[in-house]
Amino acid sequence: MKLQPSYYLSNDVVALARDLIGKYLFTCIDGLVTGGYIIETEAYNGIIDRASHAYGNRRTPRTSTIFMQGGVAYVYLCYGIHEMLNVVTSVEGQPHAILIRAINPTIGLAVMQARRNMAVIKPNITMGPGSVAKALGISRKINAISLQSDTLWIEDQGLTFPGEAIVAGPRVGVDYAGNDALLPYRFYVKGNPYVSKPRS
Image (cartoon, rainbow, N blue to C red; front, side, top):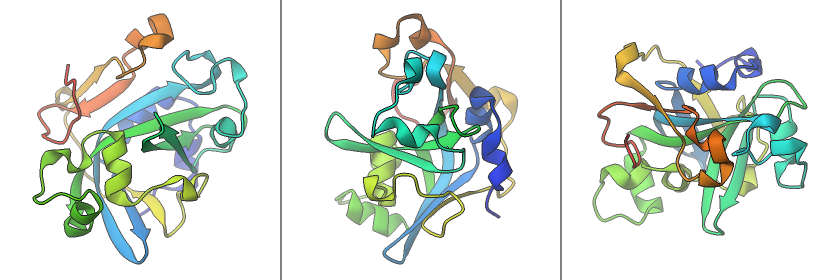
């Protein structure tokens, strides 16, 4: 069952980033369904977060999606190479987002393997945000798409992890954010092979 629109309206982006662990992310691109359960996320806390694209209320053509009402996808290009999927949360005008860093794939593995051009399936097929987007066929073409759509959606299938199984720590690759880089806004399932590095 898809997460309800109200789920995405919470203004506690950090709690939501943790709660998304264990939820199932799916795409249906060109009629091909792929997906798996989320095992790594990062929270970006809007205009007060130096690591956020919207820090200081920065509004650009790229960041305009984050300012939308929660429940849409924010897909952007990183380093001119990797497209990355973020879940926009909170109310319109409050630019919160959660980066999906890794999933444990469960459906459509052959499709993901072809998209990733991998001879054999290895954990890095969906390890890291760029790999997640490529494996699931996610691109900027679906930026701002509703998570209630039949193209991209998230489901709660009742999968949960005990508290000690979910690690909270600093985000990856945001050293430019000063003290905000140290905030424990990254969550992942301890010991899951699909978690991106670093793992501590």
